[in-house]
Image 1 (cartoon, rainbow, N blue to C red):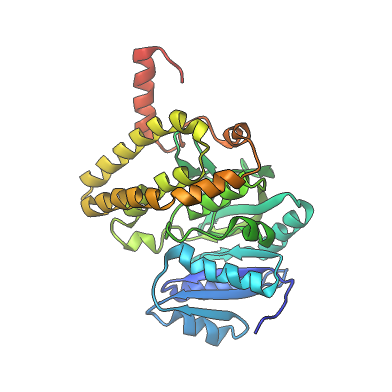
Image 2: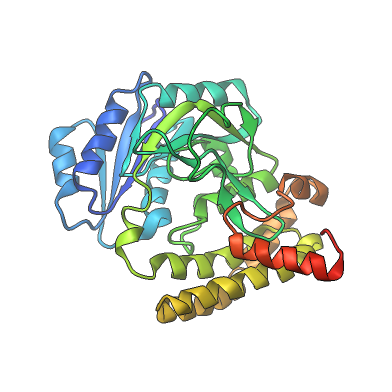
Length: 341
């Protein structure tokens, strides 16, 4: 049955979320703006989806027969939001808790800024003091990073601003923008699929904003932290894919030599930590996916509406703040060559 709603839709992908899932839903029920809440259950084995439905009968539950990752766990909800005629849709992590004004602030931002396809919020760790993300950025080394991660929140990111990408943990998307550029890319499975989506929006002429007064508290890495080598595999697989699909050809020679150096260092560190198979598998999958995505790259680049120079202006001309090994190598290189770039 197809209904129509102007309520914003919030989509929670769930994988054995337990009590955290119940806390996430409760925080959404208490929002000052009423939302239609959809749980996409990725074949959980802990009964969390049934517990959520029993406690919150107003939610909508979509069950999947296997774990389709973050991207595959959100996309059914995005498609359902389109079917419902919603104007806005927000992915939301099953281990996050929203401030009661979170959704109101994000909706207000997109209502006031028609040229924006997405808006991110301030995401803090569960302690409420340490930052998780204040928007994602892409660097001239081809490496994405969450702005402010690990910093103590002292108001240094309290200014509303444009950003490169909205974090998938708790951002609001305009359904019209999603309809134009497509949903999350399920080949990413998890990690950087949100940066890829925002990159595609930027190429299509949509802006991405940051509303610091909207706040969420997130138990970062609760799922991936339990799976050895998961981060290694997804990073080595997805970072090349992000660049290959979206980076204008004009800037490949500027970005890719630095990126491959960073990838080699990451690969070596993974091997030293005993993540041999995840590292090798990630590289192998990346090579296969690059070939698979050739038609998609052509379509994205052919239909984009902004210039190469505009995209380059959005990219941070530096390394991510936490790239300590690469910063050390760069410093030594500059001493030897006398170059500052």
